[in-house]
Length: 338
Image (cartoon, rainbow, N blue to C red; front, side):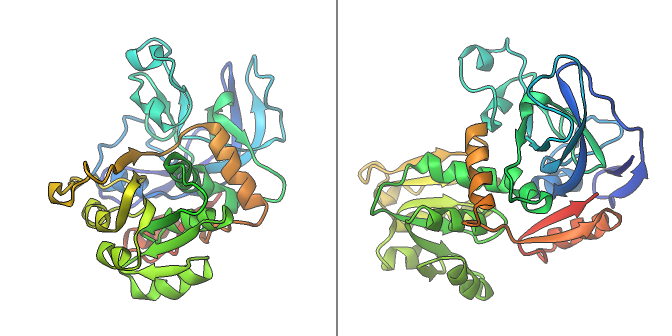
């Protein structure tokens, strides 16, 4: 099969022929039709995050495709099912995290010391075929194509989980910090739920687009957010912790800020002078918070209420796709067709 292989950190990705995997008990073989590129892929291939000990090294955790083979004991999935595979496939069931009884699906299960992680401890989705645990797949609803589904498997999943984690109430205002791969989806999810929605971005050429996607107001930073009345919820969907800290100026009393993205370089700092304790504000972490939320996000996309903005690359151009994503030239999600 064809697969995008990372030879070493900071080197171009290479499209190579590698053996096609075979599903074991409880697993399915997916013919990948579309695989989304995530900023975490960039962090791995650039060496910001340590490369996984995989051989060959194939990453990627946004694969959507069709099941072509099922392993022994699989009854929940059938050949021909259209599915997406998730980042966390399985947990050990025995460590301190697993023994808490917390969900064994979703990204919080990364706290399991023996978690099976797509593209980290198991081969990833940037390939023609992928083996995954059957229970770590989600059926794609009718009305959603593979190329639209792929970015929902991480970016859309994260954006919807973040909004749900904030628990916005009727009449509250929701602000999105960063109108990029996650933010353009979070903005649409917020509007689909009927919330007054504010886009926060310093990028001037995104202002008109944010309005087209449903933003009621567009501001440049936390100070401007404060000046237009603030927000009860701020979803941090960009990759700057410094910007997130600054945006707290616009968080209302009893407000919730949800950190839904990764800045592997800079710390998130709370300025005590802003009185988070007196204002009863909360900082919440959210990512992939359960397969039921992923199914909800996919359903919203399938209904037409939310539309991922994707740029599709043929697999032969995956190295170019990675470079363009790294330069910020993709608006907003890069998807590789295999």
